[in-house]
Image 1 (cartoon, rainbow, N blue to C red):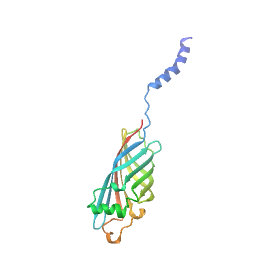
Image 2: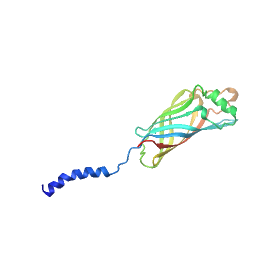
Image 3: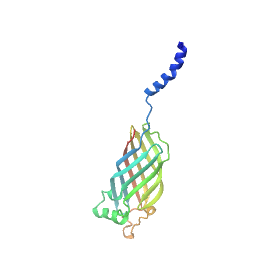
Image 4: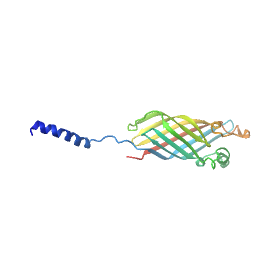
Length: 191
């Protein structure tokens, strides 16, 4: 076998061996969060009510841009007084009957989860509050930082969309539309 023939024979072998030593980016696995923060704010004529939960749980699957978030209704704290919290859980949210709030669906924009940066995205899905699902598109900021994500969002929820009624006697103390803010840090769980 002459030198040229030997090189033609060895070239594919060398190429295959070289490819094995290169490092290709690995796909990022699902991202998870166990302690995100949800805050709601009700600014009515006579009273402002604010409460928060640090028990927001969620997942984002980069392979198909899907997401799912949930928080236990009874996990909210920080009301103006214990009676407000009791009324929130028993009269308005009926936490024993509807124990979770959730939002699940897909991120509309394509995101490069391998490249650090901040992305403004629209999350389209079903928002479940007080046992009533509503399709929503919620704008969010998604920041990729290595194997972590940081999520921030602010939106409003009209109480009538979820069959939450305000008794006439307290209509000046409870807003008809509640402001929600979300902050969460997520970590990649796979690969």
